[in-house]
Length: 215
Image 1 (cartoon, helix red, strand yellow):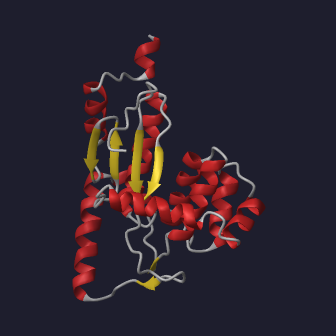
Image 2 (tube, one colour):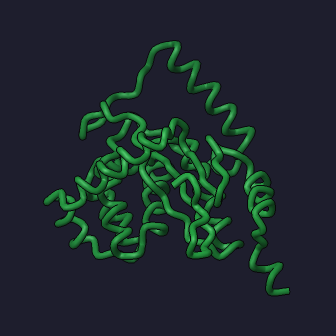
């Protein structure tokens, strides 16, 4: 998995991330742009940041230390990604990710995982949705062109629970520590980075934007 440029000749892009991670949210726009410009199909895979979070979530920490960390984080995001910062609304609690990972597997089986992940991030980070709730994931599924009723059945019956857990274990076995962790072909990028850095990595591996190829 660390070598995503496989023998079938396709250039592989994989992103290990958690929906509850603000830095992963920041990467969505970048990866979506990368997909458009280079005509790629990136894979979003789970990296479970807080497996101790219960399904109902946990209240946000309100200690002075936690507030200071939040201020530093917000200042960093405002400087590095001002457009996204203006759209972001931090949840009042730490949300439960695993159900969303199950829904991502469902979307993958229906070929809509790339659109689904964007809808989940938007619902959580810009619209105040709770991704630990089936209704939020159904709404994301509908936006991504999935049948929400079919998704509801899959989530209630936990059809994808085992597969989602296997994906979480795979990330752990790969030594994923940062969210996001981005694989561009043979290159691994730990954490959020500028789009220009990803462009340089693509060029180093012989990839060119489709616009340039068509001109």
